[in-house]
Amino acid sequence: SIPDWLDELGEQELGSRWDKELAALNVEARVVLRVNTLKTTLPELQQKLREHEVFTHTEKNYPDALVLEQRQNVFQLPEFKEGLFEVQDAGSQYISQFTQAKSGMRIIDACAGGGGKTLHLAALIQNKGKIISMDTEQWKLDELKKRAKRNGVNIIETRLIENNKTIKRLYNSADRLLLDVRCSGMGVLRRNPDAKWKLNKEFMDRVKLMQREILSQYSKMIKQDGQLVYATCSIFPSENQHQVQMFLESNQQFKLEAEQIILPSQSGFDGFYMARLKKN
Image (cartoon, rainbow, N blue to C red; front, side, top):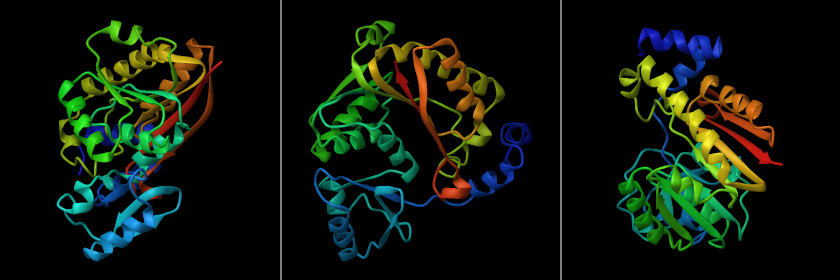
């Protein structure tokens, strides 16, 4: 189910764990909803979904997550159109919690994409504060604006990253900085099963270089005593712990506060890594 070179790389990266993770990544992904706590509560939404014969259960450690008992198209439900929930894997939801964001903070989500984590952060800080969502592609930010409107979120400012000046203008300005960087996607293969046939060694080398550059340049946006969360949807240490270690060795003002890896074989969800660093 996987190219030989990638299988060898997995063994190098994870040793005996690799077979377990590969088996877990070949199991169909579960559908997980994130309850939008700005508009409803988990028990209320669970009851409303039950009335549509959409049955869900909760998961320990994921306070805003509802897992569907069986796959269904939830995008046609009135509750989705009203912004009561988003579809977002539980592991992905954990990253926003991991930032320790609080109401009133200035937060930068520097690799926002379509904005799933931005919207969760807005709910976690009760729509009080400021979130600057950044990406290199305008269409993703346009999609985020539509989703924010549906979610009842009005504290988001989007900024297109056109060049390094966009980053420089925000130096020393964020209480929290989320760097959910581009990666190999080795933790989310069950959602993108064809990705493993499109990956190659050259891309893996390029993406690791990009991760290092983002950590080095974007980390300057964090304030003194602020916190940075570096995250990937990969389970390979070379994209995760090794990148953080290299960054810390050349940036003495930062220290590692905590790190977490969510493994598909243990959680039943997608694979993610996250590290929280404090700027002293």
